[in-house]
Length: 221
Image (cartoon, rainbow, N blue to C red):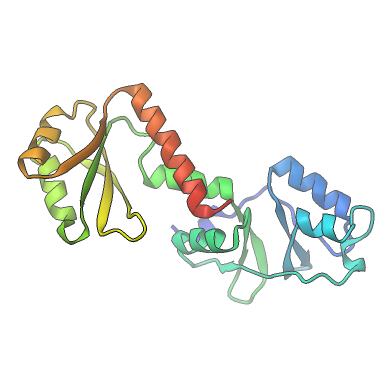
């Protein structure tokens, strides 16, 4: 998926003649902390709620003051993973999107990124979860998939984390079966460490919430 596929059709842009109060109102309505400033189709930069409060701009037009705006953006054909990387690095709640002529096209919101993450992780599809712990050098997705498929199941998604200063990987598998007993037993026979497995609906909901928190922490928002 590309950046152009996630552009929001509801988030407005500001003009330099708009007041800080108007910006804060829109930020509150859409639950975001940044808005783009655009004159015609020219992207001037992002303003945050902190900028408005720090410069006491609530009652004045934004353009009355010289602001040290920063201008992060992605182009329409960049992959959505690059959008996530930029949002994480700069702690953004919206990411501006420009076309090949550097004309403003809209923004991607953090909420849109979370929906994308849920879709690619197959969180909405029924099934179970297995969490493996293994050495990074031992990781083989083809072998893991063969074990799952050998039990007449399919891997819907794979989520990999690696603790800092560690050679271990934690591999979270979403599988299209809720009964994971035979799959777990096969992994054990192949000397895999089963860190956790989730087959009960309540356990799955708890895991999803945990993965959501991890994703939010990754984005540093």
